[in-house]
Image (cartoon, rainbow, N blue to C red; front, top):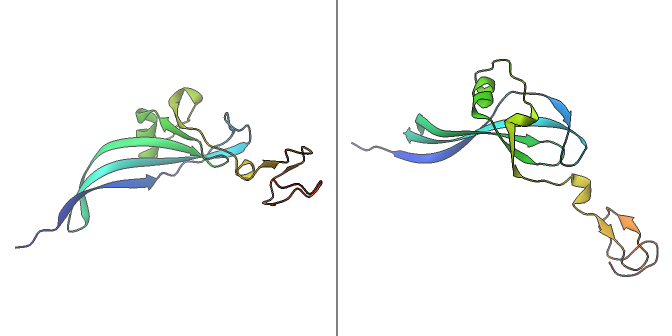
Length: 126
């Protein structure tokens, strides 16, 4: 008899919607709540799940927070839960999408988010 089994990591996006002003980038964003877990599977069917952690990722700047486990369990059971700042622990700070390609000319100080090789104002190399 042949058994195919293994231990792996999983991630599940939970159904939660709340629009807020982000404390990191000060832009409008949405909480995107997800759960990570380890699981044991037989014939590619998950049998046992453990090591569950709940996280919140901001849609505006991709900052990641760890969520209080009790609030996470309420959300995963689709119970009414409201996430507050006290329920979040910062894991990874993010950046707004418009700041990723942000450039400033060292010669004239011109600022742009475009991917120019030369400054459009003075012509100097970035």
